[in-house]
Image 1 (cartoon, one colour):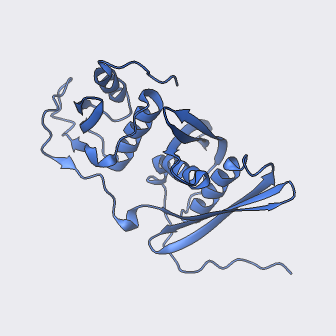
Image 2: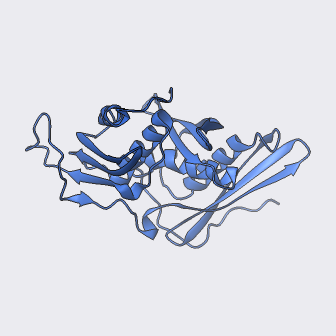
Image 3: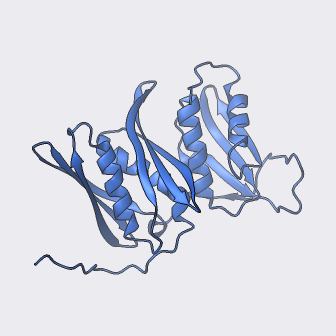
Length: 243
């Protein structure tokens, strides 16, 4: 997706682009110069607000090269039976807080790479509801080209929390330059009902590029995890040992 480089009326173009996202009925951006001060979303969907907000963050970052804090975004839920064809958004008094509680989100704990010759093993540890799970993936390549393996290990770790078997594959995990920042973009393919669905997540590289890969993968997976059956968290997982 090409990045919008021009300025001026970019907010109106951004509103038009956001309005095309899934479950977005209306949008209003309040900007202070080039910075977004408030962003209001109106929806008639029952999808969690944090998922809608992450869609908006991804669009603004990839198309308009603008990174926003989720705290500037509010989502208002309208009655689908009383909504007009072109709903007005100003102002939204019933905004739903975006911040999730500690137990609602799968969180990053650690990522490690083990290199033996030309073989690399990536190991990712996640935490959810006080329980940690580890996923791993191995392959051949260089340390710099291990992003794909880190994404695969993240998918494997998340699988430990859900009952449903995820038919997921990592399509790509790469670092792109947007303005002055490096951004990890992870693309996944989900096979569901004999159809392949593309999932994409991104994360700005702050310090550790491999940590950014994990967070970008979790952002992509967040779009489907909410609809999956989760396992009851247990402190230990028993696995067969090799003879």
